[in-house]
Image 1: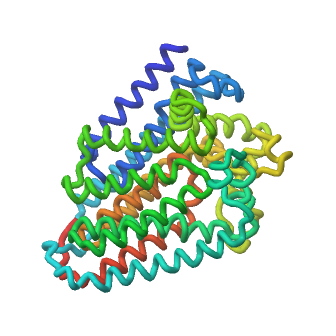
Image 2: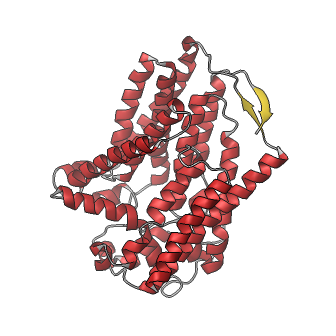
Image 3: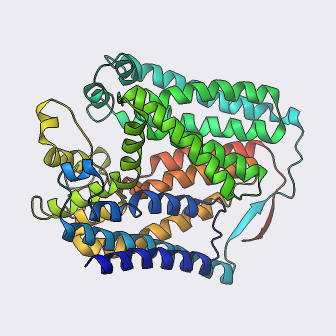
Length: 441
């Protein structure tokens, strides 16, 4: 059993690399699909041997020990990785052969810096709205989780009140202080980097500090780390021909690791470097796998297949009651959270939610949907003209699509965040008054 498990795990990685090369996806090239694949391999696949051999004491302590479920989850993860890249590769290959996609493209980046004033005003206006909405949001909160953590108090209740248990439309507030502030910061960074604008760097520094606070005020660690990574990727996209060398990957990893360790010590009270490092590795490599494990034993044994009830139901327009799958699963996995009034969350990769809704049929079909979804957004990004804005769109949208690796898939059916961010970027692109001509994809 052990040898077979290791063979399947290794074979999946080999097939993944083979298909990547066959579909002409250059390893190290910054693209939407590559960001997703990197996150999926890291967060949703590499850690299975750790669970199989019970090398993570915390996961063992929480009951993730059933070898049959672990192997089953690994097989589902293998298909979710290979199926998605196959679907994307086939669609991409067809589009290249048929040449049916025409994009507006710019001959060169030659805009006078004085013409950037409308762009600076545009992003400043958007960020002003972000600041106002964030102020309204904070005014509705009794305490900030980040301040609670820095004072040595437990952040679980405060974080719950700021997110899952927030008495209001948290997702609309977070759209502004979490997502749109992120877009604004990346856009200003790319603008300042491209045109070497002193005023651009000044604005970016303000945006960066505000966004950093917004992303950490719930005492969550991953958002800020991803934020730093996206800045690094935008820089590499613009300065290194869309390529990320091994040395740069290592540098980005070390900076991200350092940021996570510092936040673990500050927010979680980890008393030592080793403890913080262990917690970081556990969260990165097996955190999402534990979610997949729990989904497999909960559905349909504890809860019947949802048959679409976890899908978005805005304003109740569809004839079903929305099932908050991440919070409901957490109630089953950690009932003591609910007893303490803490509303926790147990997300997992996209195939886990597909399984919870439609069983193994969902697991089989979901990767094809994900591959097609990536192709659609690649097509959308192609209509952005300016290189510095396209860099932001590629990286930011790529990270948003990377949510498939750790946050289910129903969010993609009502992608308010993606649409809002894309509209801002395409508007900024058109404000640059580029000379447009059409050329084949």
